[in-house]
Image 1 (cartoon, rainbow, N blue to C red):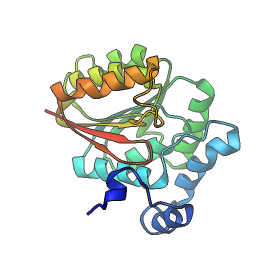
Image 2 (image 1 turned 30 degrees about the horizontal axis):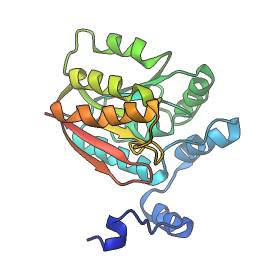
Image 3 (image 1 turned 60 degrees about the vertical axis):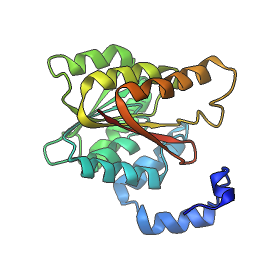
Length: 219
């Protein structure tokens, strides 16, 4: 159910309400708390997904029974941990990060969580690394999560269309482009291109999270 205001974009969440919800549905253990708080400790951008979004990533991976997942944009490793915790036993997550310093922080958090065998962090431009991940394994990937440079979203989505198995899931954060999706700006135009190209290969929805999160199932 939604009322007129919420359909028009009004949001009822307050810090107090979000704290209550997260205290019931997205509780952090020591490893998740360490990873979530790492950007503030290390002077990194505090742009990680929220606790509720992270919990949703875990549950989505569990619903998929995911065993093979690629993430673009590691930051401090929080979303990687959330994804990996929902994966099937023996699953493998490859997370791509451009910044070597971020990658080291993420690896440390992943090791603290005891998940170094399950999560591999690779440093470098994602578009240079992605082709090697799919070589000889076309259409076998279970899921891909994009939370990186927004101008790269169309290219990441095209790669996902070739790498995901039928029924595989593409998740993309910041799909509202920080509220500037309709702006006259080259990066906003790239995000609009991303939205426009998905329909050819995916069944899609865009969840109205604070900055929009696309869910797209490979046809």
